[in-house]
Image 1 (spheres, helix red, strand yellow):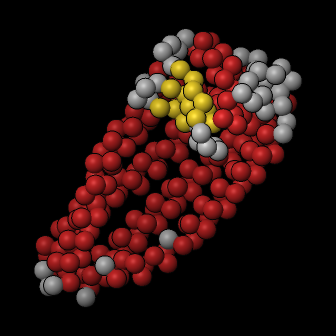
Image 2 (image 1 turned 180 degrees about the vertical axis):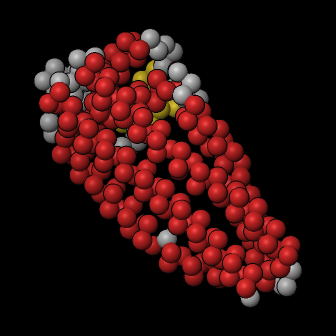
Length: 235
C-alpha cells in the first residue's frame, strides 16, 4: 500500500494541468458572461426554442444551485442550469445552455457514444464500491508472500479502475459533439448571430479542455496503479 501512495508523484503533473485548465474555463466564462446577446433571449428560453425546433419532447429545464453545475440528467430528462445561467442572456450562458440541450438531443436520438458512456458509468458505479477492497486485499496478500493471489486481486482491481479511464476517453468526443451541436443550433434557431457565436465557442472550447484534462488525470492514475503492481511483482 505504501508503494501506491509513494507513486502519487506520477499524478501530480495531471492535477496541476487540470487546475490550470479549470482556471481557464472560469476566465473564459467570466469574460463572456459580461457580453449579452443582442436578441436578449435567456438561457432557459434558448433551451425551449432549441428543443422545440428539434422536435424533442418530455424534457424540462430546471434551475439548480452552484456555479457551472449545469448538466443534463438522462434519468429524469432534465436540463439543469445553474442560477447564474438560467435567466442570463450572456454569450457564456447561452453557450453552456445550448451544450446541455445538445446532450438532451443526443439522448433523444440515441447517440451511441452517449449510450455507451452512460452504460459504463453505471458499471463503474458498481465497480467503484469494490475497487479499494480489491486493492487492499491485493496489497495485503502480496505483503505476506501470497503474491500469486495478491496479483489476481490487483489485476481485477486494475480492470475495474480501467473502466473509469475508458469513460474519460469516451466522454471527450461526446462532449465535443454536444458543443458542435450547440454552436450550430444557436445560429440555426436565430438565438445568436455569427459574430456573437464566437464568444460561446471560446467558452465551449475551454470547457472541452477539462474533459481532455480528465483523460490525462485518469491515465496517470491508471499508470500509477500499473507501476505499483509491477514493483510488487519484482520484489
